[in-house]
Image (cartoon, rainbow, N blue to C red; front, side):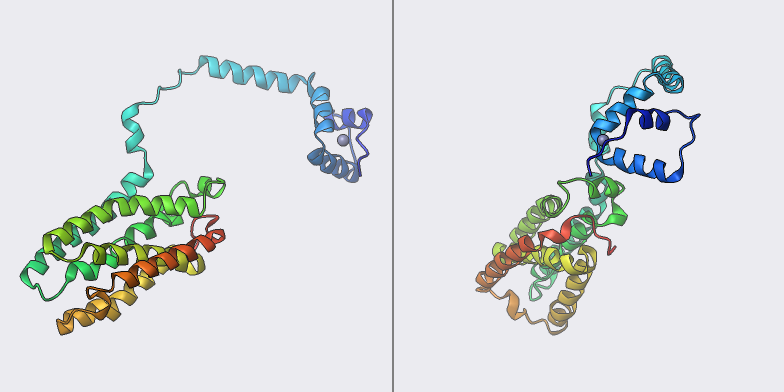
Length: 263
Ligand SMILES: [Zn+2]
């Protein structure tokens, strides 16, 4: 249907004094929504409208009389970064726990605490980075084309940028295998993203963290026997698992169009 609105009808629609019946009003408005040409004609009809001119002049005057916009201070840029400040406590806590694990492992070398904590170390940061509840800008992000898996990966990378050096340092201090500290950490980060596509990233982090704690950490501490999953020689398995999970995460990218609502 390409019948355009007649100039007479548009003039009546623009005239606040004219009375249009509901059906005509509805058909005019639904046509205007679709037709840029008629919207331009309507704008021409409204050009002489004294009210619009008065409002425009008032706004101009208000802008001219108001204070000049404050120049953006460079020092505020970092302070305004939600990501930096919101994640800082979580990352500090994780690094502090890893530090504690290094000390405890020095006291009891039979329990590889650093290796036990490595897989779950990035989970709190990843969960917070992708939670609607924790992000004041989530509404903006939801409407941004760049939001989605790419943003989740970027935020996860920012978390890992802190966790990986901390793990490397911890493995260096305790003499445990660097590959066995880092690969499970990456595998669990990828697993959180994959599972997060189904149940929400935060819930996935809680589930995976609990599962690892109950199935591996608690039995290892109770029996003082290193778990089979973290023996030297399992790094190939962890590398393969990380690759598979990363592939699955890429396939699940459609699930990350917006911040998790499963918060
Ligand atoms: Zn039209």
